[in-house]
Amino acid sequence: MVLKGKVWKFGDSISTDLICPGRYFHLRSNLPELATHVLEDADPEFASKVAKGDFVVARNNFGLGSSREHAPTIIKLAGVSAVLAKSFARIFYRNAINVGLPLIECDTDKIDQGDELEVDLVTGIIKNKTKGIELKSRPLPKAMLNILNDGGLVAHIKKHRDFKLD
Image (tube, rainbow, N blue to C red; front, top):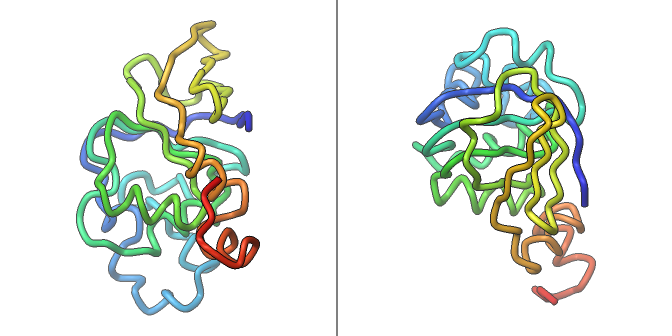
């Protein structure tokens, strides 16, 4: 699984409230509409300019705060192929894998807004095509790759009629 796209860079402690603003709570049953507001409090232009396959890149503690399942879902619906950060809030991490959104823990200091990346989820190799450098992350465990390949946990369970990870 190799993903390619442009970087949208954010800082530390991007909360689920910044990802999925609470004032749009009434849209929680209309996820495509809610996705048009994704990350607008962190970057007002993000939702209207993000392209299919782009990456969200942040620093530490991405997804902290409430356990809103909508947050990773609307990131995925916006077309983001993966989120790269130095660290993630634990509940956000699990929710993202469950909805089929890859999260990669890595050093993001050498990745900037607008950089073009190529991310190999199996090997953990991140190629910054803009800077001509290669970064290494811990590859995702096989069980998580299987869930992601199937489109998320629900799709994985439906496909295998069980919670089969191998």
